[in-house]
Length: 413
Image 1 (cartoon, one colour):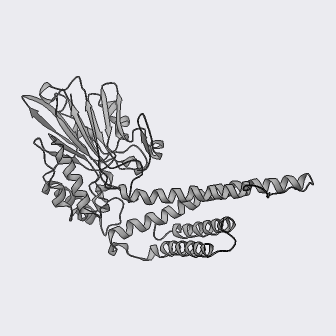
Image 2 (tube, helix red, strand yellow):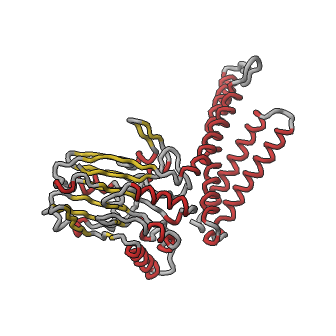
């Protein structure tokens, strides 16, 4: 990506948007005032700074930057582009309207006034202000979302299963997913999330993948924090698509392989039992159930299919109740429901709820739903259930809007 024309295309787009928005800005601002000058200067200082950032991006090694500086700078530049793009849609509507009016006037050989004067504001000015308002609101909302990335939300629910052995009724499971430790910038805030988990006094803790963004070394400063997670029946984990280091360039295949081995060791050192296409038997009060965990298996996009149910499932048939940990929720429809219909409960993550959306009683929406049928919360089909955790951490955008980081507490009954 650094050697492609992507950044030059982006620079061109930014320049066009800046010029277009500035033309409208000049129209809506007062004709002469100190405020007008200050706004214009501020506009170009911010716009040129953003373009310089994009221009230098391919030539700067951001590995030496503070983590917060990288994430916030990228998010702000993205926010500026998005807000100007949305505002420009409103401006374009007005330009098309006025252009159409002019063309009709030429065809019919009648003078047509494109603008009007009088009481109130013209349609052009209204659309200009509306575009500015929409763009400003979008950017302001993105900035506001920065403050939500550590606002851990505890979601509690009770799940009933016909096949659950009596000894396991009332068992409390904490489900978390998508930690993405490489994105963290506030260790104290993360520790508060861990305290929330332990306050729930779970019988078992299940983590469904994406411990890091790319590299095992991202956990160096957070090993002591996540090592505090413990439960009487254990902490179990599996891998997500980011854990394999597939999204960074390695010096060699051996280096990438070594990174994965180091990550496996991280799980072990924290006291987590990493399930790699296998199952374990859990026993309580003389009853037994099976817990399965597979590596990442995604049916959408180009996500990896490292997971092997053919290795994890055999031997679990004899147990009346089964829980599967599988990072990507698309696995449920693609393979679990069609080939393994005795898997009672599947736990997944991966989507983060896109870290953006709207959740109201009886209604939830996020752009991610147009790619993932199951993207947040509980889904049921027959006797099988799937729960998709909204993610403990964050990736890319250092914030959340409407979809808060989640700690799921499941009580089996």
